[in-house]
Image 1 (cartoon, one colour):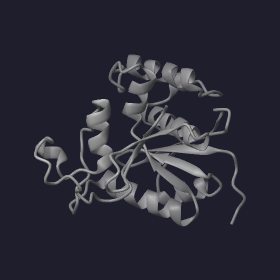
Image 2 (cartoon, one colour):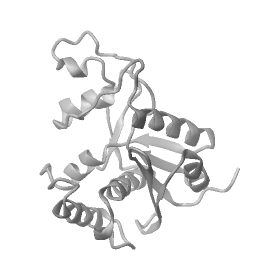
Image 3 (cartoon, helix red, strand yellow):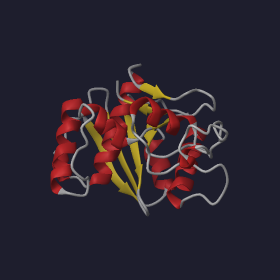
Image 4 (cartoon, rainbow, N blue to C red):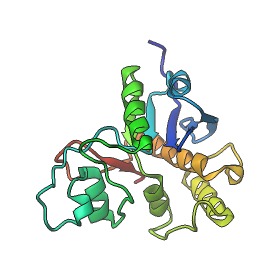
Length: 208
């Protein structure tokens, strides 16, 4: 087993590509890349102790299926998704199904979590949009596909501790991966917050 480095990383799953940012304990960007396959990810992540991923790690066990107070869409969801809405008023645009069919990006997320854990990497689920809202005092930034949205997110990342790269030039997928990497750094420091109601073991990790 290779000796673990002090780097942590974030992973954003696109429709066809994986977006990866690794940072050191000071928040310095050490690696940033757009990867084609999960094999490429494993090669890069083998020495990284913690990776925060913008995707669920497993299908839902539907712990709140009988809760008629929840919106119908969320009754089959996991605790992390439900708690994020109830506790933070941030409702994810998707919910994790309990059974197939699963969206393609979600299947890649399941596999990424499983393969990284198989080589000794701790994985966390995070939601970059919620991280940016946390850093921005609950104010929604401009759309991430817009130039204003990318600049706002780059500024928020720098204020949260990202250093060593002119992130203004990054596409939104790498900005999301950088947000996930900062959440992983918070976890390494014992500062990250697990948003969950605790019934199924799922949690969405966010900055303090």
